[in-house]
Length: 442
Ligand SMILES: Cc1ncc(COP(=O)(O)O)c(C=O)c1O
Image (cartoon, rainbow, N blue to C red; front, side):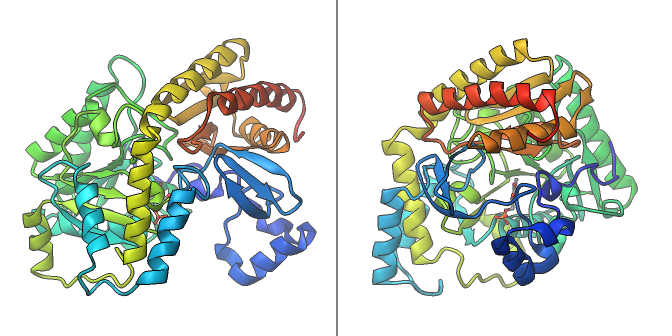
């Protein structure tokens, strides 16, 4: 258990260093001038993007990159079915959310068909942060308690309340007193027992501090913690344990949801876990900003009895049209199945490469969400990780970093990734590992 901030903040990983602004390209300087200290850009030398299609992005100089990092355009960049749905709906009607519009309820019916039957109320929002903020407030209203358990390097969003449960966003100071963080599940045979013991201890600690446990909130693939698919089923036991102590289990599906892990449509479902609240976002609209929180009607009613909730844009007709198109494309193009088979192929190929590359310690993942630990076993190497990320970029492949030390390659391509594209990635990684290990900043 720890309540100190993470060693590496998630937004600082593979980020442009603003102190180097004087040497930056004019487009980068313009961005810094407009957004100031809040601008977060990838790479020491940021890329200006102009277009994208499928798994590929194109920069201002016409260079194409294989996008292995983006789970927003999850069914493929600029997917024609989503583009058409958004264009048709915005040409017909878009409005605040205080009218009955059939396309919205058609979408909610289709989404609910994918969710556990008891979570039959869905509140749409514009961002995952808003969805998690609402989830935390509902958990407090339902339980009458104030505390939360999260994982060591979790990221759940950017509101005041949600930043407090996002250790990886805190640059200084500890977590608020009402939050206790526990390590993500390890890969050893006793991983589940260790995780459950830590969860139990964290809840006891929140009790001793006088807050009690309102909820255990986790991302079921532990993405910012470095991608931990965990022993199958362990999350179900964790959820049961929290409920047995009077708290709720909130499954944050912003990362693993919508088929990414291949084995199931949701990350919690991969573990057979039953959440009390589910939040979702990023891939939901394939780039159209939309997110949601689903829970039991009595839980939502308990919150709404004391607090009004209205969201001007959340669940507008255009968002619903985008979301409906995404669900259709996942089904029609069998993208969850593709995440499973192409993900297994990719995992096997990276593991084969790891056997020949001592700089790769561990390869983990589920579906098209894979983490590759860089450094010798037990000696994470964030500098080499950055060099690999840069070397991949110079080979036309975009990846990112995650984990407590920023020494895990985070691989998360669109779900339409082909075998040929997976192979292209592995060839580039093999080459980049060799170059990055040999000399700095190739
Ligand atoms: C697991 C998780 N939850 C929530 C969020 C917040 O979503 P948003 O950026 O849409 O507010 C993120 C964003 O990266 C995330 O990774």
